[in-house]
Length: 574
Image (cartoon, rainbow, N blue to C red; front, top):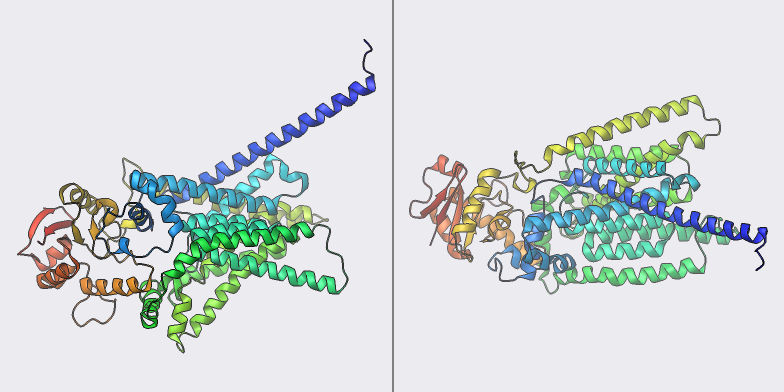
């Protein structure tokens, strides 16, 4: 049998080697991707691992459980109101009905951090990778550093109190979609951006909706630039994504994204259908002026938060000006600029409120400052790391001064990030030293959880309670209904107005016309007031803080005291 020629065997060997190298490269890329996502997820978990329930978890997860099991706490006012986040409740509800709520919270947190990590990694890789350098392990470390900087900035620079990394609620998943959309915009793939923002809007109409608005701003700007280039007869840049495929993909993504967004937006819009305009106006006023001004009214934002946000904007602009320009970076910055334009619009609306308060309130309730609170720290973090990575190489002279500046900035950044990571274990749940959950920060946490545990074991399942004004987790800990909670404000206009009436009836002294100067407990207003509101709202038990008892003496002499601890007492009213 004739032997194959040397040329043939060498060629076959070469092809085999190339295929092996290609497979090895793909495997290495997958391993690096998994490594980056795992480390970034751990970074986000370090920042967000507060004891359950965290802020808003008692709000979202109890409502999700009741959506799947309407018989659970059927007489609870808040749980019986309309749902603005239907997709979240439909998906999470069955799990919340089957498993303990604390377990559901941790499952959801891990899923949320993982999706945020995937989106963050994609944004970092889109901007930071340059040629072959982006395929090495050193590139992975740059991606992780960008995520660590983002984790820090997004927690300390929001002006309106928005947060991205935290407990299990719908907006965490919506922000993950916005991060993916931001990476797609930076890469010039607007079809994927529309699809991701549509999915985000389905989960959380406000977060996803502002993400869509930011994508639209960048897309329109790109369209105007392209049209201008065409008018001048200039060819498109070689590195600019374009062509028929991009156009078709963009249209398909836009249509699919709009369909997904409708799943979340339509139910939210239907909450206000057929509502009397006067009721809708009053509900908007309550939301903007009385309940959520710290998120919605710029004049009520904390001054230090505004200063930190402005510093983050300055950091973004300086790092953009100092870094190596590229079309991807320009589109990324476009997302941040679009979010700031949305915030500027909110400022104008707020400035006009003295002239048309009803119209301004209807508009301000859409959280105009939320997009910038998330996108500005995201873009600033990536641009800072981009400057650190490419600063010296982008300068042909490689001046010693610039190299020294980059090195100094890198050391300072690493110190700050390390300090931030070192501070995180202070709020991690620990069995030997219980850490107070943030949802119970307005009550005496240990005594509150103890009395709630007693209620869960010793009162009827259909009992309805009057609870202290600072309570936010009563239904979470007890699986019992409450008349009203300050934290748990409904979403539909009629229920918002009813919520205010209940708060006023339970906690406002005679002659008080606003939601300021409220008492901490209905018991502080006298036994007759307690009996009146209990009859009006169907309550048969009340939880009274011991501080009220100490200051007034026995506030309910004709009620049966069932249980007491150092912080609270439980009474049966009928």
